[in-house]
Length: 345
Ligand SMILES: *[C@@H]1O[C@H](CO)[C@@H](O)[C@H](O)[C@H]1NC(C)=O
Ligand SMILES: *[C@@H]1O[C@H](CO)[C@@H](O)[C@H](O)[C@H]1NC(C)=O
Image (cartoon, rainbow, N blue to C red; front, top):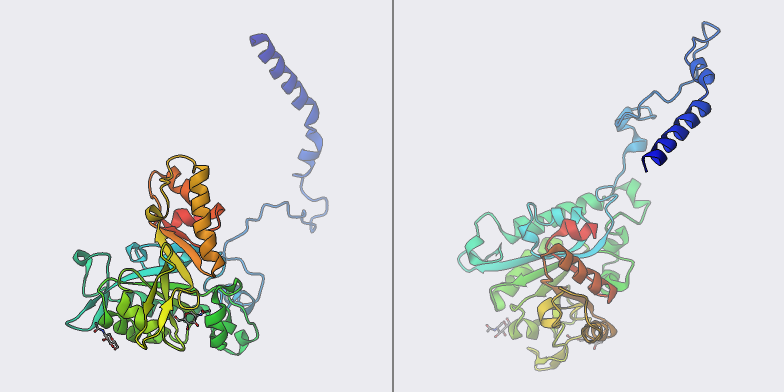
């Protein structure tokens, strides 16, 4: 063993002694033969981060990019579950390319405003739906979709096409046809009934002309809400259908009978635990896979996008196995609490 090792070292030393030519390396460091002749640069110049070859330096028009607000952020079909847990709701999710976000809203009957929180204990005066979501989305969208003569030449920005905003009719019908990528905002009505619903509609007003697809979700979309939304001849607020009860029917306020379809509810969701007996600890069994696959395919066959929420968060290898399996089974949205992990997934 030792003999072999020594042999190898000897061989490699001998090899390097032979293969390194001493002469050319020394020649390159000699002063130029003519005093005015500088040697050609040999790569000793560093690339400075702020370097600009254009007049005007870093502010040169060539280097300024309108609509570049969201550049280099790939769009990801990630639903940012519990978005308001993030340091900066809306922003953090969008900066990781997640295209779907969620707010749990509570109506305070004393001031008729919506507040954002997962539970009553975390409500504060400052955390209103308007401040945390509406204002932020308006800000992001106006920065991302710049309107001026120069940018009007183009019809595409990074997140949302300019055409989206111009062709609103088309927008609402072709959101999900693949090429357009609006931001999806899920509003979970924590307090129930008419008042919360009407307050949501009122507070959404600043988003009306913008490429945001709003879906009401949660137990708050009870019969009161459904019976009002379903009969509407035109609507720009949609519902999140219950993935496990897509055959539900109800009576509308106009007396008509209604059921779930993808015009009313572009997406259908269920909690992961309610949709499958598989817990993700081991590979999914063939039977569980068939059941889950059929659930997704049946809904997709009826035009619904699909989402399973509250997938396991820990251990991370279980979380990743569930994400991967759901992805392979063709789910439309990955639901994630850890948005950084989902973005890197
Ligand atoms: C909800 O509002 C609708 C329309 O405003 C009304 O017809 C209905 O009775 C209300 N329901 C309740 C429980 O207040
Ligand atoms: C879907 O349901 C809505 C009512 O909620 C109805 O207006 C529409 O015609 C239905 N679409 C289809 C394709 O059945």
